[in-house]
Image (cartoon, rainbow over all chains, first blue to last red):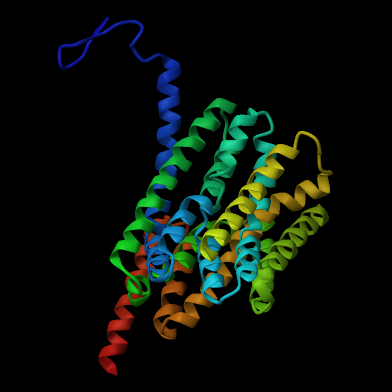
Length: 245
Length: 105
């Protein structure tokens, strides 16, 4: 038995095992991996909240935090409703979120051995920042259980923080985020995710092709330019890799 | 009611897109070529979002502070700085230039 500083004792049953320590360490690593992203995404969350606050149905808008769980698709859906077309709102929201198919397909190989319940639960929280940290973690050594614990730490942190921050934006009021130019935080966050990849030979062609296509196809209806850019970038990336000696 | 319907439909559709490939991977194993395309698609998706977000920020904010902030953010990103450093530096540059341009006007 080990004595705690407070004088209480830990029995063998309650003392943390090596396995518990490893688990809490992986959860902590997940939280720490997500924390800087929360700081980066905070201004954007406030902007999303201020847009929801200005919308005619803030309760439904607030529910979208959890139901859609993706800021850009959430905003696109709200804007579509405001434009007066339910069909356009749904189509635009789904097209903007179509990249989730890509994230899911990319994680499918890493999570192939994971239990079904984990894939069902983790899928609900798969979005840009969680994909980014999970993909990076999957390339490092570790067991499937450690990967699960890491993902729950990261995704749980994002879910709680995103909900709190968007709600804060709603309470602060409409137009506050836009007045401060906080929407600039979104491209800045994404820049930090893409910047290091531009320097890698294999990813440079992907970034350049997807970027140019997104720019040129930006005026395509219902955000379909996003899809065109994803397909073009991914195909060119695969072709470049194939031709490399 | 319209907002509820839209949010529910996009939420359900998004969940299907998030979970579908994760569950179907057991049944369908893609060819190495398709696997390679999928591997690059994540980076392409984030890049496409980045460009779209830059264009929106450019349209919604004063041009010079936005351009300067994105340039500073881009340089820091290429140097491998953290997300927090990039966001804070970019926003500070934007706010400083907004104040300067407002003062000049």
